[in-house]
Structures are given as C-alpha cells and as structure tokens.
Length: 280
Image (cartoon, rainbow, N blue to C red; front, side, top):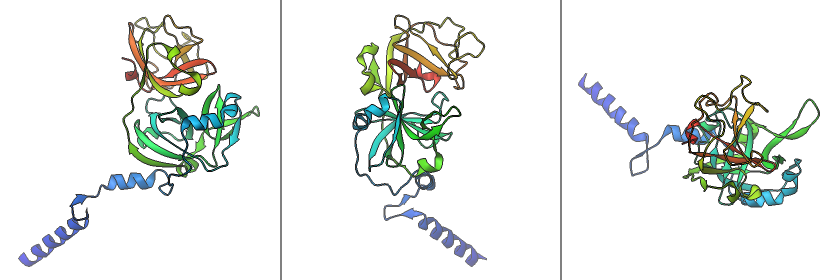
C-alpha cells in the first residue's frame, strides 16, 4: 500500500512539473493562452503600418463625402481601444486611438469589451475591408445595403473581423483634457477620448434622466441629445442611446467633468459616454 502511495505521489509531482515552462519555474497561464488563440489572427505580422492620421488623409474625400471604398492595398493601423460596448452606448463598435488620431471599427458582435477592454492595443489589417464616412466620421467595416437601396459602411461579421486583427499588449489611456470645445479640431480629433472639464448639463434638474423614451425628450435614431449651458447645441451635445445601461440614470446637477469619445456628425461634436461613471 505504501509503495502505491509513493508511486501516486511521484506521478503527481511529474504532472505538476510538466505544467511549468522553462528552467525558471514560471507557470503557464491557460486562460492567457486560450485568449490569445481564441480572439484575432495571431499570424498577422506588422507591415505596411500607417498612422490613423495618414489613414484619414488618404481617404479624406471618401469620408467627407459619406461614400465608401474597398481598401485594396496592404495597409495596417495600430491603436489602443478607448471605447467599447461595455455600457451599451457604443453598440457593435470599438474605437481605437494612436498618437495621431482615432477611428471607429464596426463589428457585428456583442461583448466586444470582453476581449477588447479599454487599454487593449490591437493591430488591424485593413486590406479587404471597407472605409467610409457618416457625417464625416470615419468608419471601417463591410458594406450594407438598406431596404431603401442606400449602401454604406456598416458592421462586419465576427468571422471577418477575426481574420483582420491581432491582440497586442495593454496601455494606459489618458483622455485629452478640454475646457473649451474650440480646442479640438473636427478633422484631426474626431473619435478621440476627451474629458470636458467644468460644464453643466442644461436639462439636468434632479429628476431628468439621460435618455428617456416617455416623450419627455426628442429621440432620434434611438438616441437622446443633451446640451451644455453656454455651449451652442449645434457645436456640442452629449449623446446617449436609449439602450445604454445608464439611459435611465438621473443626470447630475451642478458642475461636472464629462469623459467620452468625441465623435462628430458633420460640424457637431457628439460626446459618447461609455459608462455612467464617465460623468464626475
């Protein structure tokens, strides 16, 4: 009986040792390995890399005219995720940003925040995808044709997206601090993560919520725009989806700081909060 116990003990030690990598005794993390192999295309290598500013410049006329085109040449961008679908206000999209600019990527998949949290850096292979603009806001995805016959860039299938990106490391995301929206350039800064300091929400009265559906606020494309005191609504709005997890949260009164992705619709800035905690 003792001999059997010793054999089993030795076998257990052997199995434990086989789980260790190298001579330094570091443990292999199965979850990390599984994540790396389950999401994205690990065979993408960095080549033909351009900045997001260069991407915008190359396809400026396409984006500005609200049209679309296929990216036919080998081309890659690399950026850090600044916005995802964790709060439901950014839907089927991730926003990535580098030192030069930001861009929206449309993906027909929920739970994107699970493998692309804020701070996750990704490498994106653009060849074979479409680029276009909506209200002069650039987007990457595939084509969709509506019932009315309009064709535009929209959400790519999950299987397509999996072949076009690679997960890299994690980086710290620091919003641009803004005290006056005129500090931002509509072309260069659209899509960037910002913190708007020292503003008051015009419609906040202690009971009003961000995105009601009871008729107390205008709903356009399933979203409600809120304004800021002293700032023209044609220049800047706080835009919240009626499907956001915080749509029914009461807006804070008094002076606040608002963090969010600063998208644009033509010449109007639209701040998209990611969570209710983005307003402090």
